[in-house]
Figure 1 (cartoon, rainbow, N blue to C red):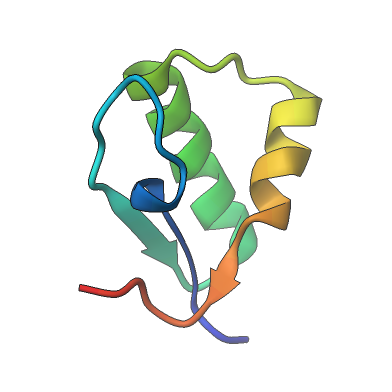
Figure 2 (cartoon, helix red, strand yellow):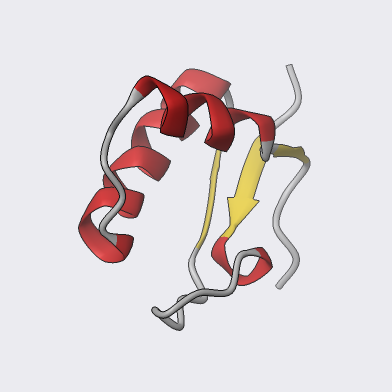
Length: 64
């Protein structure tokens, strides 16, 4: 399985965030992204949020 990532810079909002998160599997990445989204961006951990985030995962490594 290829490494997956998501990059906050792709989703501008009120919080200027330059964090990119990556992991070797989707489940691990999803857990970290949900924690980051709740703590830093104020998102609620809901099934809808998890589904939306999972659809945004990209293969590979985030750009520097």
